Amino acid sequence: MTAGPAAAADEGPGPAAARLTGRPVTGERRLSAALTEVTLDDGRMVMVKRGPEPGAVRAEAAGLHWLAEAGAVRIPAVHGHDRLRLVTDLVPTGPPSAGAATRFGRDLAALHAAGAPAFGAPPPGGPEEAYIGLAPLRNAPGDDWPGWYAEHRVLPYLRRSVDDGTLRPAEAAVIERALERLRGLAGPTEPPARLHGDLWNGNVLWGADGEVWLIDPAAHGGHRETDLAMLHLFGCPHLDQVLDGYQDAAPLADGWRDRIGLHQLFPLLVHTVLFGRGYADRAVAAARSATS
Image 1 (cartoon, rainbow, N blue to C red):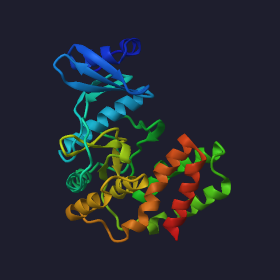
Image 2: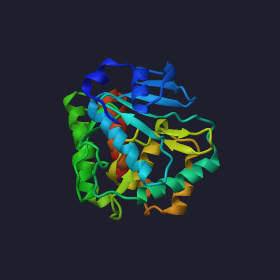
Image 3: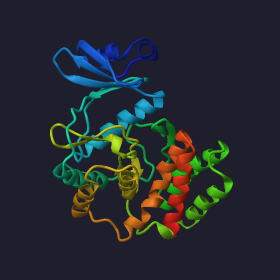
């Protein structure tokens, strides 16, 4: 369901939820400037998220649909969206468990195996100019992962970090040297995988039903090791069990651990653009680790 710009701009999260679900609203609880829990008259609870830009809302909705269509990982149902807001089911959370982690690893392997038309391919109906968090993300398709990854996932954020003065030219040169060696460092050629695209721990929900749910994707076609590298970036409960489940379902190519830093260059530089100097140091360290 969609609405015109005027309706989206004039109403709050409760009225947006009522319009997009078709149900009266009996309560709402603001969680942050962007997120509101809304209770419907039938007792169900939904999450209303306000996006930073209209393109971000459209991209997230398309990404959730695309991930759900794979029938692999658990994705909250999308009730509708307009230019500013996205309404999805609320996922009740519970404690992480090793069993859920192992199942999630297998499910994530199945999601990746669902594939994508090309590296950088956006979800069907999703815009080419999308977002990862609050940072612009361009989904421009390519056939060659090393070249596409350098051009569309590393260099845009590297250049902006230098232009903003967050990353020093000598540090940028370390990352550029890693990109020059990318073809030899990338490992065996793999087909485009269907990626969540922003798979850090905050977007992995441990459901009260004992299963793992994924939210807030920046979905696109990419290399499957990128999702796994992002899980490593900020830690994830029972990560060893997630990896065991993944490897049982779809073994990774030899040397994948040595490539974690290479795949982390993308999210680390995004964080450098958004949050500053601390992530610049980590990005340079990741480039050095990938080439050592």
